[in-house]
Image (tube, rainbow, N blue to C red):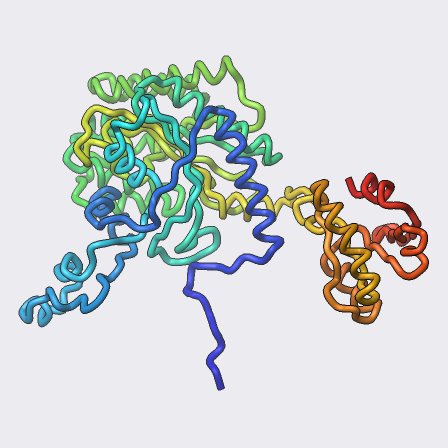
Length: 456
């Protein structure tokens, strides 16, 4: 007996209705990307390992899917290395490529490789799948799509303002209310690490702090201690664990806390400009929250950072995120090219819209009309009309077999086809069609022009 087929954990098949709903989200995002002046690019699904490794921190590197070299991939491994059974030492010998972890690092590689063809500042968007060897759970998959927009070649904070407006516009178009755009600045986090005497532990500090909403104050303190951050430093950072008040009050607290740090003060100034400007241009749907614990665990962020939280009545992780990276292209040899970008989490946005019932009913509609097949003569008559309707952009089908009427009608019902068209000997003689409205159950005889007008 053949084994039942399956797919790897963390991956999914998508039904026609699911593909239609995903397409609705993608089309909405893409429409706004274009409206805001972004141009589309695409990059390969896998990159050379050296392009990806070392760009996402220790945790990120661990989640990168490595691709075994083709052919005899163990040929380059000597007996001593093989005997050690140490996969970390062996990996460079047996794997030279890896599936992309995100779209930002491949984009940086693209910019450097094509710098002579690009007009800066360069605004690009990219909607493609990425892969992470993560533990699958609700809203977290091993294969998922990212919808990214980035600008490189400008350090202006107006880019950040525009990205906040872009987030707001997309969620407004999706009718997703109650979304919160959390913002912070990595310069502030660097300043805090400097003030508490933990500059040498900046990455460990930010990675631990970023987990506050997941593991709580006690968990964060424990992780910081395990990473070598001492008790006195953790005590100094304690106010961040319960950082409350209005945005203005938070800014004033940060100014006082970071008064001795030039970098931290610069971060506060950047945040203050962004918040004051957004307050003047206003948002339609989203709200802004200054979250000083927001760190985002990617090493390349250097300035403003964003994370989008779903409405509070939905249990879901972030549905978007991004930030400023001052020299990401520098890792590939192109120095002093500042960039900033954001990403939409397609799969999580899908789950949120599904849970809240926000997908329009029209998303599921495909075929507008189904012609019933009574036999070859009737089918030919219907097929000619079918072709004419398609020329007008109307989605229509002919049932392929002259099966029993009940079977054909059941097919139309299951497909949620709104109109069923019948044409027998009588209709052919009169050059008409009998149209059944499947929702109302009514039948009307009409000529082709009337049929076309109805379906349009």
